[in-house]
Structures are given as C-alpha cells and as structure tokens.
Length: 405
Image (tube, rainbow, N blue to C red; front, side):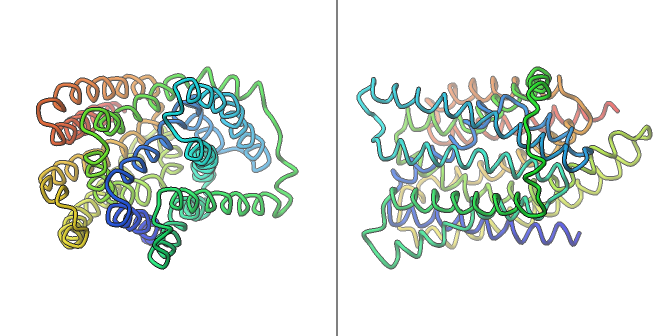
C-alpha cells in the first residue's frame, strides 16, 4: 500500500501537469491547437505500437529474471530496434509530406518527429525498468518526459503572451525529453553499467518472431484507443477534436493513476506468481488489485467530475458546455478501459499470448465499426459511445479469459 501511495503521488504530479497543460491550451491557444496537440499525443502512442514490433512485452517478461549484465545487454538490444526503424520511417514521412505539398509545416514536422523519437525510446526504457523491478526510477523517468515540462511552458506563456503558441508548447516538450536522456545516460554510466551494453541480434530476432501476438495487440490497441480522435478530426474538425481531447484528458487521470500506480507496478509479482503450480497466489494478488483498483476508480471518478465542474466556467469555451454530456460517457468508458488494461497485464503474466492478440483484434474491429456507424449519426457523442462499448467489450473478454487457470 505504501508503494502504491508513493507511486500514486508521482503519477498525480505527472497527470496534474498534463491536465493543467490541456486547460492552458484550451484557454489561451484555442480548441484547434488543442486538437493538434491531441493528435500528436495519439501519435506518441500509435508510432511506438507500429515500430516496437510487439517486442516490449516479450522482452519485459524475459528480463524480469535475468542477471543484471544480461538484462542490460538485452535492454540495449531492444532499444536499438526502434532507433533503426525511426531512422528509416521518418525520412519516408518527410518525402511524403513534400510530395503532398507540405500539409504539415516543416517546423512542426521536424519538432514533432524529434518528440516522437525521443518519447518513444524513453517510454520503452521506462517499461523495461518496470520489468527489472526499478519501479521508482521508471516513474521518475516517466515524470521527467511527461510531467516536468508542462508547468514550465504554462508559466512561460502566462508571463509572456507571445509564448502562447503551439510551437512553444512543443519546444518545452522537446527540451524535457532531451533532459530525460541526459539523466538516463548518467544512470547508465553509474556503477559502470555501460560496460554491460551489447547487441544480442539473434536473441532479438527470435523475440520479433515470438512477439507477433503482442504486435497485433499493440497495433490494434492503439487503433481502438485513438481511432475515434482521428476520425473526429476528419469528420467534425479540429475544434470538436479539441473538445474530445479535453474531456478525454480529464477522464484519463483515472486510467493513469489506477493502471500505472496500482496494477502495472505489480507486473513482476504477477509474472512470478503465475509461474507457481498452485494458482492461489495469483488469485490472491488479483483480488487485492481488484479491491484497491476499484476503490481508486470510484474516488478518482468523483474527483474528475468535481474538477471539470469547477474548471469549465474558467475556460470560457461555450462548445465545452454544450457537449458536457459527452464527458460522462467518456468517464464511464475510461473506467472500463482501466479494468480492461489491468486484465491485459494479467493475461501477459499468464502467457495468454494468442488470446491477447485475438481480443485486441476484436477490439480494434469493434472500435472501427462503432465509430464509423455512430459518428455520422450522433457526432461527438457517437465517438464517446464507441469508446464506451469497446472498453466494456475488452474488459468482459479479458476477464473471462483469465478465469481459465
């Protein structure tokens, strides 16, 4: 419980910073810029899913029990994979942008590309640190790359009105990522950890083949989560995308704090208990996480509702007030998604690899069908309803599958 509270404090600080940035962007930059920011945030999740080749979960499960030097070499090999893929994919995107007449301005293209690259590798590093039981370091790194910079950008904009631009927001994000990598480099050189860095090419090649179910899960999971946001921008424009992003950001506080402060830090314990011949240890841990997670979901849902009620008058954006019912749907959907993602980690610990892929494919197909069916009819509410139904379906399927041990 003490560990959960400490991690919760770090996550609250991180989430509060991102939440305040969303409010600041909506108030001082506008809903259109918030929509663009929301799309970039979505890309920071989707691109790692595409370029990670599904290997994060496979590597994480292996390094949990490796000796230190072997784990460092394995981690370095895993991180080299997306570095090489970014070096190939990003220039292709530059060529496509030029061929299409530069729909994305070059300064945003290059800044956004650097953010996507540095954030991707830092995110993978944080996940792999969790696999080694370095929970606090992983969460500190997460805070540095995601929660440290928003207060600086906000203060800069409040003091200097000329800094109230999307470019300044992205510059602050990029600088924080550079600082994060300086800290990670210092950690690597401490205690001569760098000496263990090496490339295990044949090992990671085998991992890519074994990670096909996880790759399917990552790709389809990101589609399920962010497809609605991209379809919104295409069908309804950037302003309503900004409305959706703000409501989603408020509700996502619940998901971040429950999944990554209560469930995710126990992943190593789940993996170890799932390897025991008697399932009692795993079920005991599952019940503990159910109770603790459920209490946090209820408390945070109430807190998020109160926070939004107090903040909406200050934002002076009538479009938010007009679409307030959408928030309640998104909040309920986020609670279901928190449960679904928690049981996703349990399936990983139980080696339900094929089921992970099948359920994720089903979730992505359901999300696409529901969005395409509901968006034209119900508009913004349709995207929220698609999110709700997809989250409920994923939770039901993953819970049912974990019963078979």
